[in-house]
Image (cartoon, rainbow, N blue to C red; front, side):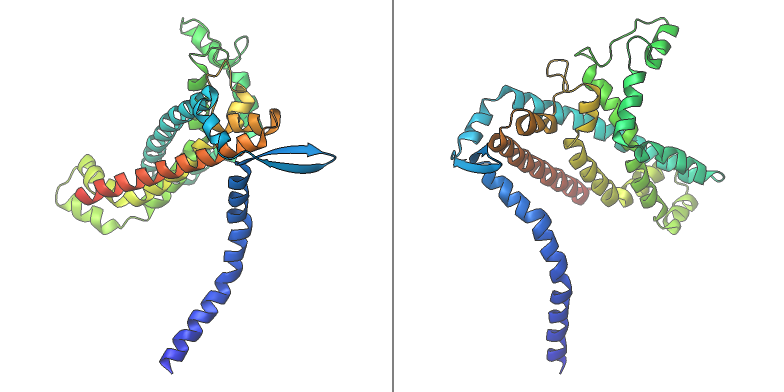
Length: 296
């Protein structure tokens, strides 16, 4: 009887999971398979009908000599490393400050979350005005302190850094929200015992808070790393990949290949390569973090 009940439980569990699995395959697996197949073809359009022509691995071979693709990968890596690190650090310390506040905590949370609630088009318009060389508020402040105004979005030395600042401002609330939820879920008795033993604030932070929060920190980091690699709207709205290739990121390069140049097969090859690179990077980050956690 027990064996029959277990078999029945497995059957109904599989039945209830089947719709979700089918939806996942329909919305995720099939598009990825089609993208991979498309990367081995060129597509011609005539009379509203697409014609696929096999190209073998020629698109992937061409990627090795594509300077724009190489530059966009390097820019994306630099952008992701600096932006995500800044957002994680700021989000963590904002969460610490918020948990230490007794009164007005709800107000602080609301204010800190405002940037992530704004649509991308509004963020682009706001920061483009702020970065304006002629009447932007940033150059007004720079002039007031006696420095020389800069063309923040038109100078190749400052354009990528300017977009990184916008991304940090935009996405720090995301890290703050996850860090805050993790901090508030930590057990109070551990911290009370540490305080009774005479541990200082920094000792508690280093030896208790950070180790307990490591899983949440890792999840937040991986989520933000994936989103940072997909950055598009900020680049599109503020610089359009320029000046030159100083803000050319991989999503914007793929957009050019797909929609501007109509090189669908080549753009698909770029997409597949980028997907593989992101997967390798995330696996490496997770493995490194787990190794450090196990050794410590």
